[in-house]
Structures are given as structure tokens and as C-alpha cells.
Image 1 (cartoon, rainbow, N blue to C red):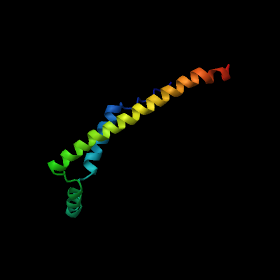
Image 2 (tube, rainbow, N blue to C red):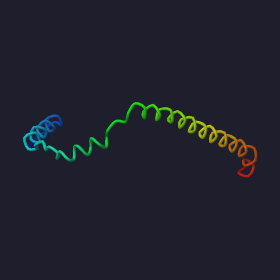
Image 3 (cartoon, rainbow, N blue to C red):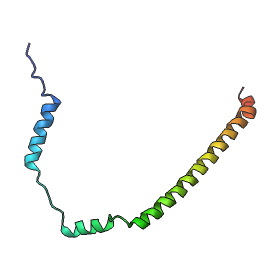
Image 4 (cartoon, one colour):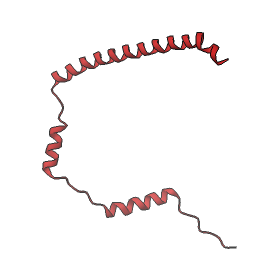
Length: 91
């Protein structure tokens, strides 16, 4: 019988692919206008503005926590009512 050639290991395949792409692909510099517009959009706010946002984040987390607690309470009451009254209908 004929022996089949074993396929190369995945490490060899990735190494070959990486070396081939390193020789083929070249770095492309973006236009300066694009870089400047991007820097303007991603600019970090002043420390005063950051402090205000942190304060509002605390309020946001308090509101979300309150809503979640209310939902848990409603679900608990609904499960208790289903357990007491709804179970009789399914038996």
C-alpha cells in the first residue's frame, strides 16, 4: 500500500502563513486629516467633567439597583401566588 504524506502541523502552517504575509503586506499610513479628526472625536474630557460623570454614574447605579430590587420583589410575589393558587389548576 501507498503511504500518505502527513499534513504539516498547524504550527508550521501558521509560521509559513505569517512569513508569507509579512513579506506581502505593507503598512499604510492614514491621511493626516483623518488622524486629526479622530483625535478631536476621542479627546478626553476635562477632570471637572469626569468628576460630574462619576457622580451621575453613582446615581445611575442606585437607580438600576432599585429597579432590579423591585423586579426581584415582584417576581417573588408572583411565584408565591402561582405556588398558592395556580398549582391547583395543573394537577
